[in-house]
Amino acid sequence: MNAKPLVWIGLTVGSTLGSMIPLLWGAGELSFSSIFLGGVGGVAGILLGYKYSDF
Image (cartoon, rainbow, N blue to C red; front, side, top):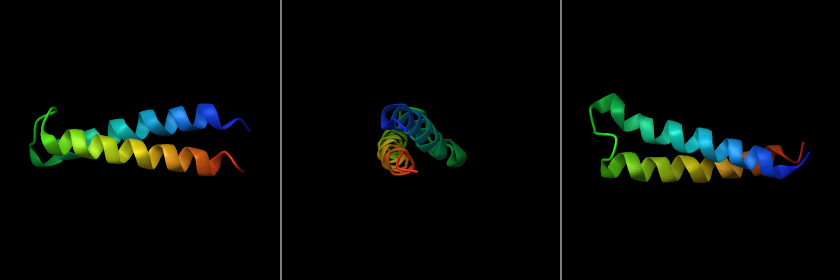
């Protein structure tokens, strides 16, 4: 399967979920932790999307 769609889906879902995690403890949507975890989630989503494209 082509890796590009899975990588984009992983990026979108990972960054969205990562940036929403700080909302659980009351941080704002544009707080440092939200932006940082959005980046971490995006990178994790990219890696998972690329990994699952090999199946």
